[in-house]
Length: 313
Image 1: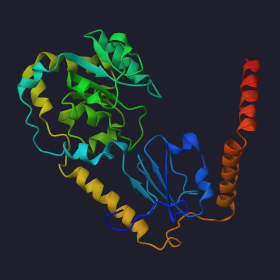
Image 2 (image 1 turned 180 degrees about the vertical axis):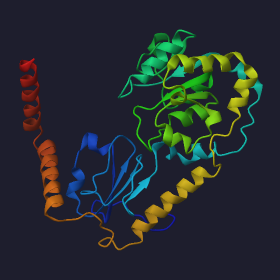
Image 3 (image 1 turned 180 degrees about the horizontal axis):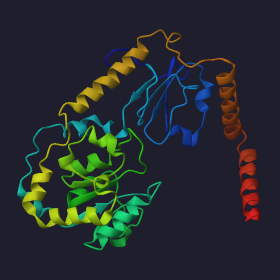
Image 4 (image 1 turned 90 degrees about the vertical axis):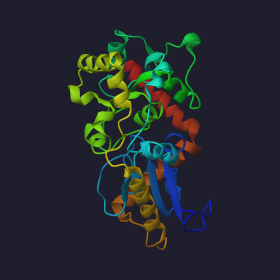
């Protein structure tokens, strides 16, 4: 935005950005601001266009000029641009660095199917899997990976278990891109339709290509693990089908924002302030005030609900 406008961070804004993380700490606080609202959601939070004018999300959907699909995996422009090439030029000298078989870095299992656990269990039967996250950690003295050393740990591995927390059309996180940056071969689980439109299928192992059968996936992994030439060849495959894909996505993001901000703030409003949506908004605002301004009362109700649930059991 600073490329096009004089941007001022204000407590009384004409345009309000709301991140998905804000819902954790102060849910529905945005209803306090009767201005143009833009949701930025890079998690499993679908936009409510009754209360937001625009949204930037992980999900593929159409809503006129109000929505942009821009997944979380593309947020860090500098990191992604380094992968945007038709050649990777990785020599077989890298094999000396690959002292570990496969990494598994998570803070929890996935939401549906326990696919992360299935992969960890299946691959561990073949060779030890390096689990450096807080979930199923097997590091010496239970050391946990940090944002600063994650890539360093991944670079010591030949493969990475890059499984999304859930599979939704349009959703692609940083996990597979971190694996590429570490020069490992990603073993990917997520929405196949999404990645097949973006990523070179020869550059990663897609679990869905094997019917989500971890034994068949492991057979492919074993083959690459025991054939250095094929392994290096796969590492050198270009990441993207279209080598300008990210730049095109970033350009769409810029155009989307400029379109919003080029309008007068009153004309940029898209949400309908009719009786039904407005009633919903008032209820959400009341909930926000109840939860934040009357916390003892709110948590008393929560405790009572838990006691009732326990007694029913």
